[in-house]
Length: 163
Image 1 (cartoon, helix red, strand yellow):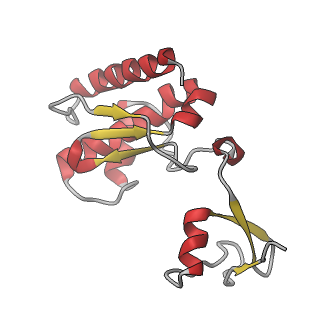
Image 2 (cartoon, rainbow, N blue to C red):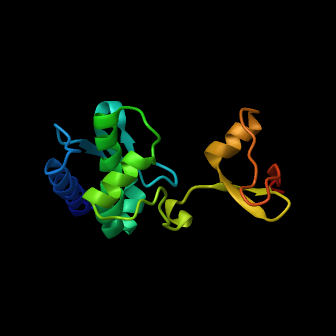
């Protein structure tokens, strides 16, 4: 990844952190930042470590979205954890920080194209459509550790073997 993109991400963290300092949701210390988030996840807040992980692949392809959406999203998680402890990840406290502090819609998921992550997916079928599961979820199914159902029709997902 270009160092300019990383530098701008660090600058964005500082800018959005500074915004927090003028509110009741201020953090005492600037969070650290790394670029090792993988898969389809844009970013993650490591609450106990005051740390944000960003997906370098997605950041490189969509830097403005990261600077304006993902970074404030993750900072909001850190601020909520610092002030309220463990609460629902995208609950009312987080929504308040997103809307009142950052004036952003409280979207819990990004809408970036999944194909940007260049990861393998596996085809599953329910009663109404075909769904692609990530390798992580697929492996859980194969090991018998998880089963998934369709959010639309509620039927269990069945793996369509690659032949």
